[in-house]
Length: 117
Image 1 (cartoon, rainbow, N blue to C red):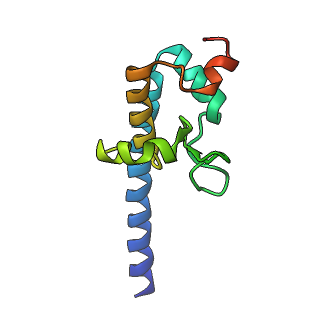
Image 2: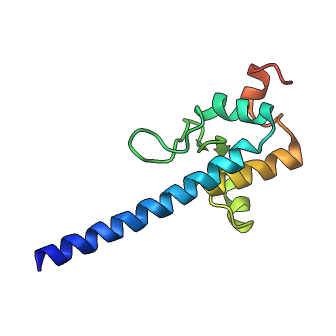
């Protein structure tokens, strides 16, 4: 009985790892297709991290969240209406890309720090 439980847990963990690898690969592909200046902004804003060392969404004191450091009070409702959860890596990347397409780089403080504007 215990062996069956352990085997089931092992299979479940294996499937979870496969799913996480697929998501990471998808996110990396998306990131690698961004223009170089946007990649540099992401690294400057969040060190290209969605989560902190405790596994929670990287959040600044001003409530900027995730890899793109999207300001939650301003953008979260709109992002969710569009189907993007900025608290997930995929959602943050997708909404950040949308912001970039519709407003360029001026909305990120690192654009100025990096001398892009």
